[in-house]
Image (cartoon, rainbow, N blue to C red; front, side, top):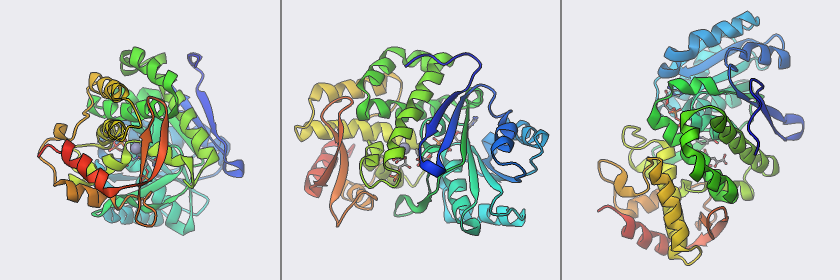
Length: 376
Ligand SMILES: NC(=O)c1ccc[n+]([C@@H]2O[C@H](COP(=O)([O-])OP(=O)(O)OC[C@H]3O[C@@H](n4cnc5c(N)ncnc54)[C@H](O)[C@@H]3O)[C@@H](O)[C@H]2O)c1
Ligand SMILES: O=C(O)C(=O)C[C@@H](O)[C@H](O)[C@H](O)COP(=O)(O)O
Ligand SMILES: [Zn+2]
């Protein structure tokens, strides 16, 4: 894991054969987006899907950059937050793209966090039966995770991401400068997905994060290194299991619990945002693994300690405003996309960096565990 060379973007390839694409990570990439896009897709026009917060900070500079490379664009600006991943906003994006008369070979650009990326990616996958799209992730979470790998979609009352498509982008441009305007709470939430890669199968990376997380939060080379290492980790998994028929499910560490909690609070980001749900979910997954004698309580405590040290929540009691009872939480878990013939699947662990896919986890065990950990 060397430090990135100053000035040069780090390039990570997502190796998907004739649908392979680059992730470029570094300073100044948003301003250069027009050139990077025009070099790969000459003559395209664009819809820029973004949210109000990102638009206020970055849209003018971004669309001017596209224009100076000869790319005309139409902005589609949405309300910020998880509730935007909805059928209503999907319709808004589809209408915006069609009203701009973009053609199938034109592009949808997702300029924003994971919410914008998942929604714009989904819209691009269905308009004219599949347009091309480019991810310009502006949150840490989007730069290390959601912009890579082609999972797109929206939420429903029944659960997270239950409607969507696998649809890969043509290019990912992760400009580390744009993180300067990201609120600290959102940076911290994105850090949960960074730590996730260490916990899945990169124990040395987790150890490095334990020692260097302050530098990652501060910015500079350590941050770029953490983003690049995360993208490499995700790109490797996606390249070998694009459609999650096997070990891509490991990327779901912490999500089986986390998604249930997000649904349980009605996608209210003032109470819980995705990365925080993942942090609590990862702490629970380690504690649950220890309860099932799969992992030592010391490892579970170590994970919880690091997540709390950086200021992330690790317990259901950390969510303000109360939760539905354990049976209700289990009913959200039963909607998880990893469920097979009614049997629950969890990502469990034998220790830091030793995650595994556990099929047929008895619902009764999950329910008792949820009650034990429920804030009441
Ligand atoms: N597709 C995938 O593989 C994948 C992976 C992980 C998460 N996700 C999804 O991503 C979503 C979470 O993404 P997120 O954490 O980026 O949330 P988000 O998109 O809601 O962004 C977080 C907040 O930060 C603001 N913001 C983003 N960039 C900013 C910037 N540079 N300056 C100022 N404000 C900025 C946004 O307006 C928003 O208020 C969830 O819906 C989750 O399910 C998808
Ligand atoms: O890319 C993946 O695969 C992941 O699981 C990454 C997760 O961080 C992400 O939150 C994803 O959207 C969850 O996928 P889902 O299939 O459980 O909805
Ligand atoms: Zn996630």
